[in-house]
Image: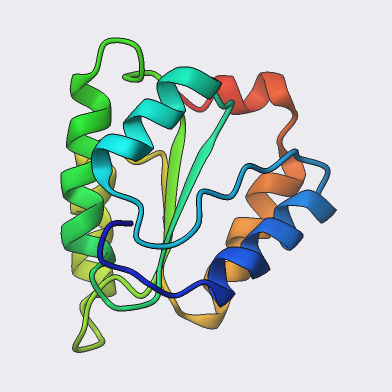
Length: 134
């Protein structure tokens, strides 16, 4: 996302998702919203995964998902978000419902169970099933 300059989480996710059998295009860190939307319009991914380490996942996630859902060509794109959703800790539970309500198909916070739930979801999905998330 736009304010997150961390790359280790992106490399980890890329390797993890590839290991689960998916092709990954990693846009890197500090991706401006417009670039993200343009890449999605051009590439037509079957799934978008957003990651936050800097603690702004909740606020940036809301902004990004609203823009995606307002775009006629991207409104049906399945989108997952995970990582550190807030900067103070403990706010994950109260933010997950709002992120889901805003249009995310799944939200994974930074608790240890988050990565297990994420890999479990991807491990159960085929390309057809990803499209059925929406």
